[in-house]
Length: 161
Image (tube, rainbow, N blue to C red; front, top):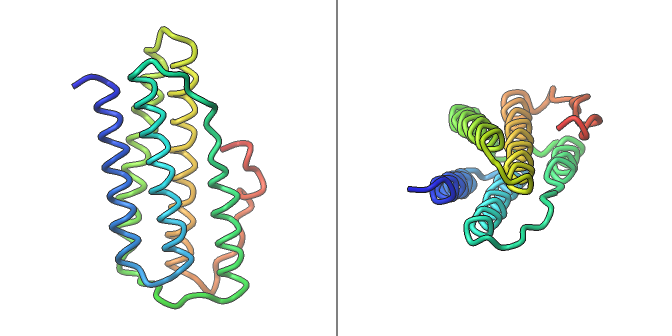
């Protein structure tokens, strides 16, 4: 299996995992965030497929952090804790582990890439995976303590992610 096929399978597995999690939760906000994460994995898949076929790849900028922040803020403002199930935290932690593994994989491949455009794309996908990890961190915090969850100061430093 070549690097692209392997990476595409990782993204497909990630998409499937997020969609499965989204089906298991009854909270509309968390469900929306999980679907956004699944959709982001689809975008990564398409980019990798284009790279594999030597097609031109456009810049990667999902805006996922801002969208997730807006959902969290709305949930907090509306005190939306309906359907939040603390027993699912381990599933979110597993998703974080997957994101971290993916991030390391893409950083490694960026370091190995000879083509500067491929190096940049792998680096950007790694950055996206870091954002996904951060969003999951906030999902875990929100699910753990929805009444006490405060806007994370990190949300105001989006450029660092």
